[in-house]
Length: 254
Image 1: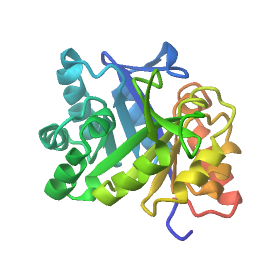
Image 2: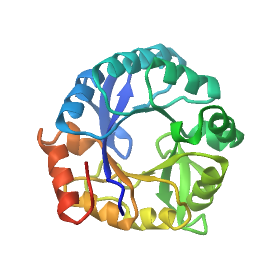
Image 3: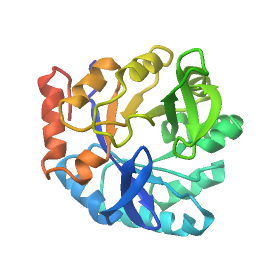
Image 4: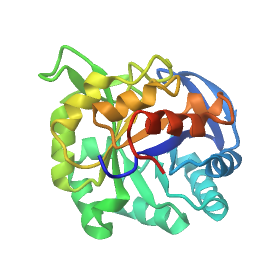
């Protein structure tokens, strides 16, 4: 691997505040998104990801406002997801200051939207968020879910990742529902499986609890590593500690 591994804090935003739970439940307040973004920028984060976890129409304006205020304060790439349904939604996010848009449920409901967004803006702006969990219902043993893992789709996660890559997504954000918030480590088997079917950048998410977990994800095939709890509730040195662990494992970091 010659391209530097990216370390990405994730801010799950609900009604204008950052929240975090375990397996998408038991959410607790983690702070103001703009202030956290500034802190992570100063601490050396390579990118930031905002996910509107409620994505209700009433929170739309709040999200655009947060994006605009954050873009004025930080100078690293910003990905925003949650409630992105159309190319027009992506256009508005980009105009507000986002660098990339993340899409999930809308693409499952109508895969053609991937083509539409990629053709209009280029695949570099589009991230497919895949919330996957272990199951006996698919050939790979991994199933795509929606609504924070509460709704099964019956779609094989490997098939979906492969189709989305062919349709034009620029990156895949692979989140393990089973590992989310547990701090027990990334689902390495899932990362290896998806890496085996796509060649586009792969962001690993879900389960990071200590710096040593991150090199494992890179070794399994991740190009970038994303986490929330370890950064929100860990030491101020967390991003630096993670980068040190990745570097000491022999992988390039910024």
